[in-house]
Image 1 (cartoon, rainbow, N blue to C red):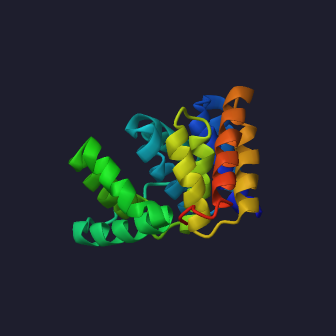
Image 2 (cartoon, helix red, strand yellow):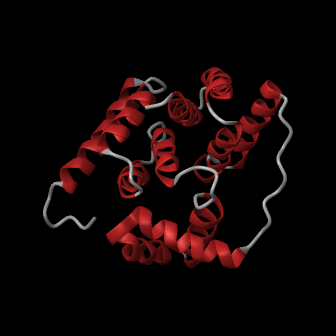
Length: 205
């Protein structure tokens, strides 16, 4: 794993740990090892999982540390986001895509639309990071949260997006460094379940 990739995954794990000192250190390392635009993409996508307050505070710290000005705004294009969101979400969830949308729609149809259009179209479909790297960053972030169903989905999503099992293992090792032992063990248990089910012949991938 190259240093830029490691720095982005470390940053995502620090975001998920909610440890301010670790985040500050990870931002400094990322500023040295990774392209600034890639760091900003990792920070931007964190709002989908941590909410606006955490993302805003992290980006404010990034601006303070680096002195970098904000980039130009991305033009809104809802029709493109819908199309892109459907494509990206289908790639991440593969054979479970239709089931996912039906399940979320049963919870609330607006959430289902927002998940595809905003989550996968507006944010995760952005061109600033390859999808496999986005998913590895999400895995590292989610490993620190009490969100095992979502971690399971994005572990599978990383594989569907083109990451190897070895790369997922590496991302989890990086996340382990930011986590208390109990949370690290829980993330490992989810990964073990993903790997076991991938070996089952009836698993749809």
